[in-house]
Amino acid sequence: MRTSSAAVLIDGTAVYFRSREGRSESGRLDYEGLNQHLLKKAGVASFDPALLFTAFDPQNEGQSKFLSFLRSRLKWEVEARPVWDADPLPKDAPWEKSERRSEFIRFDASISFALGKLLGHREKIIVVSDSFGLEQPLLAASAYGTSQVVLAFFGHQLDSRWISHTRDSNSKIQFWDLDEYSSLLFGRDFVPNNNTRSSALTRLR
Image 1: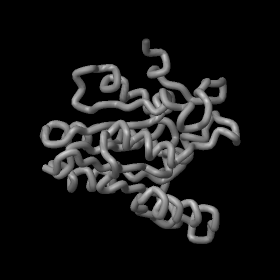
Image 2: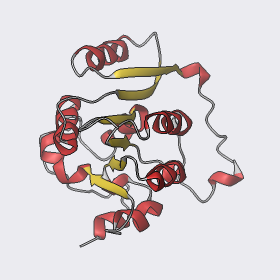
Image 3: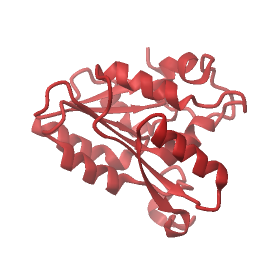
């Protein structure tokens, strides 16, 4: 295993949309601030690698510029999937009735594959996602004990089923709550409002 090495795997679509929910237009996520925060928490100078998975519209000039910024400025590797390849679940799918609707494509399979490939070759692997579909892959990776596995996301928007892990100090999956650093990531502290989805995590003391 490489000493003091870390990788970060980011569900870019989830981060983009969830970070905008319940926040004003002026409260946009500072991606450079997010990168610096994750680097500091991981205790490394750079990630090897930093992989961002996202849906991509080639005709969206603004998105093209944004992804170029992530590549050139933050040195993130972007795994972009064309939006027309997205296959969201139908709104009346029975297996979705007990869960919050997911209106955008998920990258759980890609993240899990990358996690498995990196396991044992990095001291720390950070997954930035709100998806509970990653619970079993993260638990399986943690069980090997060869890499520290971290879940990082905005606590108030994390799937509430993660609570058994996030409040358990003995959980093999470490949780970094990005809400605690809202002033750094958004330029202001996070204050939930009535239009913001919240979970039991926000009531933990």
